[in-house]
Image (cartoon, rainbow, N blue to C red; front, side):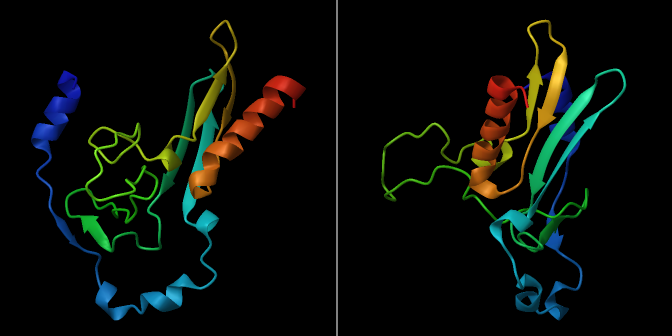
Length: 149
């Protein structure tokens, strides 16, 4: 961990709390027409100087885990399904993307930036859609590279 990350970790004294007034909400009525692809957001931003950001984010179900960070205020997600899940509880198999510190779920690997051989940004891509997001970005990338679309 770099010095900045270590300093930030040392200053975060956070705790969790319930999302305000969540007990008064019948969450089941909020889940109408909930589809897998309706729970995330993706944004690409490129400024005139070529600085770029490609970001995908989700809290999974609406209200995520129904918990939020007291200090920073963000709502925590409620899904670990983007990680590889072991087939058996006592499995000793190692998976490249098993739940572990410093790992990211597959669903957050989809933001993508394409650069030419000279390091110039050609485009930013990203999708929402859970585990299919990686396939969506791959399709866009192949169309861009192979068919100049």
